[in-house]
Length: 167
Image 1: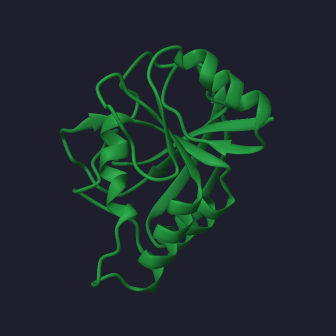
Image 2 (image 1 turned 180 degrees about the horizontal axis):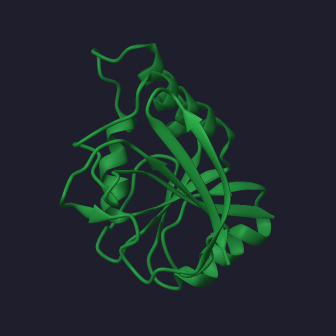
């Protein structure tokens, strides 16, 4: 059975913003290894559109960026959107009946998934960065589920990964 994981980089004040801060080399290597180990990912439209950056080669990339792109391209993606009409390579568009589709993925696949709502999440991973933004998209944009602490790990120089499960 698959494990649904919602994980994001977050500022100290609870916001996610891929343009405001990013991973150091150690954390980026962690994300490369994670992408290789995932059975796939589930994205909402906005995050998928950001991640599509990895679908095309960029000549300025270093080896680590090429490694991440290869890992990301190889995993299947399920994209939840009512507005998109098509998605890129190795991706499936999920429009209606989200709960049935995602529940079916959990039941039939082995590995981890990323998803942000519906109460189907098995684990939350907050990659806490020492940055205060004061604005942006909150990590928990919808209802805040009751959680229980599972673990914490230091990754790289400045990031703490906090792991929580639904209570």
